[in-house]
Length: 326
Ligand code: UFG
Image 1 (cartoon, rainbow, N blue to C red):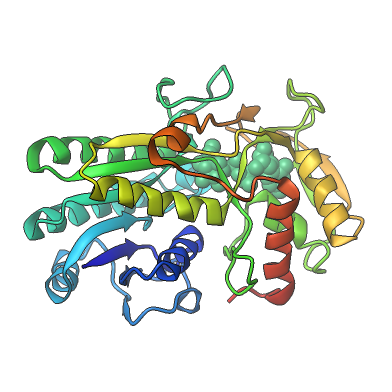
Image 2: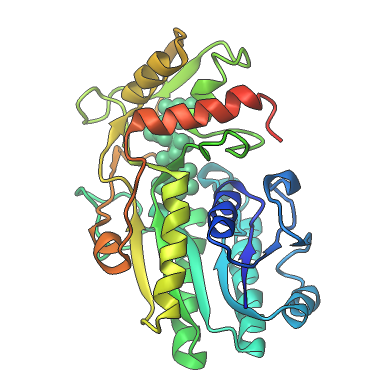
């Protein structure tokens, strides 16, 4: 009985594959390598196919007995989604539709889904709980919400149960330093900061210091990628026990400002990282901090790497060892 991981060659996917292999699960990876790297995973069953190709996906389900799916494969950049809504709807929504159809055809009835805090939009209060209103402000968040709703109706109609995990800001890397975050182009704060001590950029830009926060810069909830990985394992265990479909936030519960992240990176890398204040980036909410109480209570999830210092230290080990990624 295998677990299919779609998008298993991507950043969060590859760390989850590693976590599941460490607990002896049989893993099949499907990834079209649009933004993933084959070298990020060591699995015997790797299929470089596109989820939207129903015939090829069907073949994977015929060749293996797949008991559950962990679904990461999707486009995931807020800014890019504003420029390319068609690509986001096609890859994310149509991809999910094809996957659920093939699961239904083969009687696979469990799916853990990689959702996002972007489904909430710009909440007025903090910390964010799962019952907050869902008002995405960009096509990325909108497509993830559409995918969640599709799962809801496929559960009603065909009995495919799901756990949707709404992540906040994924960061860090496996402690081995062998796998980590590699995006092309890079847009995320922590890897961009670390490019300065790597000599790949001269300074980092702070997108706005006039927000209504303690130091004027945006506050985010950074969660270690290996804590995300363990939550996927717990979510699959939860479904295996026959529990009903659910939605969970995954965050640290602690918010850090952009300036605090830069200062922590300065200490860990022992480099003075020049930072310059720029204009606000359109669509950035001032504060996004999760309440992950529900995941802890119901899934028994236990995040282990909650310190921002640990998260940046692990990210730094990967980037230092692999300055050019994979
Ligand atoms: N930031 C800078 N300078 C940079 C890059 C980012 O100041 O060069 C700031 C941003 O304005 C933001 C914070 O650093 O306040 C974090 O930005 P990221 O781009 O790293 O992450 P986001 O919070 O924009 O996005 C993340 C995920 C999305 C998810 C979103 C939820 O990457 O997938 O959280 O809102 F949708």
